[in-house]
Image (cartoon, rainbow over all chains, first blue to last red; front, side):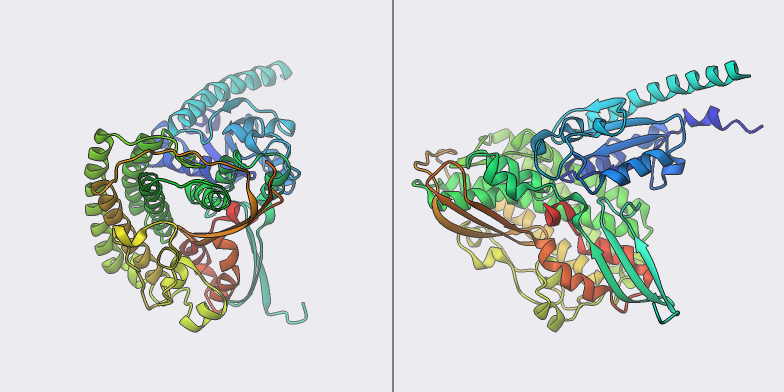
Length: 152
Length: 363
């Protein structure tokens, strides 16, 4: 059989969702994909389709209305998946913490694997976080394989 | 719907051609869009309310900068100017020049981001990568001057937070010379390349009368020939001294908007060079006394158009009201008008040419 799993760790795809951020982290993610930093040399491609993604980059403090969309995108992603919270406000709510329409961070709703600090997170930090997410993805994949072998 | 020929197509809330969540519902007859509804409130956070309940007046410059990451400097500068009108004190000429320098650098990188997005939506991926790569020259300048690439927190009440050194001035001159050369080559590309010029001519049309009656502002209005720019209408910042020139086009289509943005980048580069050449001496931070008491209204030109702040205080550290009117919000009626009659296939390209900023709009 064609081994999809073997290629996944070589070429993880990214899904990016803005859950109420100020655009600062979003343009830095875009800068990561641009020639100077070039995240694509790790095989990473930015995709718009949750069903083809492995790494979920979330920016912003999660507003009331983006909450259900965040969960929907997370649930549509196949396992194993890694969630990366980009920026101070995705980690804790940051400057928006306690505002009336804000839910204070991504980890209230979905489990976060990598936290990237900074307002706005620099491209170096984001790349560091994505590379760390690749390690976690590999580990999760191994665990899943072991589990499926145990089931047999 | 009674007429069965009309098809409703949703675009968003999450879509590959959008950086931010916004939802459009297009009513299409065959390929042509005949009606459009928009929903922009996905990123509403409640900043205006927090400015009068959670933060004191001297912390708000850093809070309102988080309204939008792309025009952060314009937001904090607009608020700061409004508060300074209500306090005792005067900003030095050097601080004003440094503020203008950052606003213009911000405009350059914001316009370059918009142009690269337009290229991406035309299917010209290589040009997208090239503009994004050249944009890093401006980003590294911003990092050198302020210490951060995107959220600067450079402007504060009374002046600016960091001084500029002679090495940085040298870097500004070398980097801007490179960017100027690149922008000149983009102008060739944008006016002669098939996928960037001919394909975009006549697409996304807005006429001068429509721009006037639907209150279009910023590059969208200037591309139709409507000469509106806050930089030429107000006196808070001495724009006339540093060589500001109004840039307009007359076609009103996507091509016209691209050309206005390119011309504005060149003008901004010229202004930045003039600023660092004629930088006055003096303090960068001066003391302001008192608490804001009274009303103040300030307008500034953000990369996307006119930004307006209204503040009201009663002599306490907490303000009574902070009202933010953002450029994209004012342009929405004109956006809707442009979409009507266009082909559905052009919708992402038209949207990218507006350079919308939804986190500004929803606040």
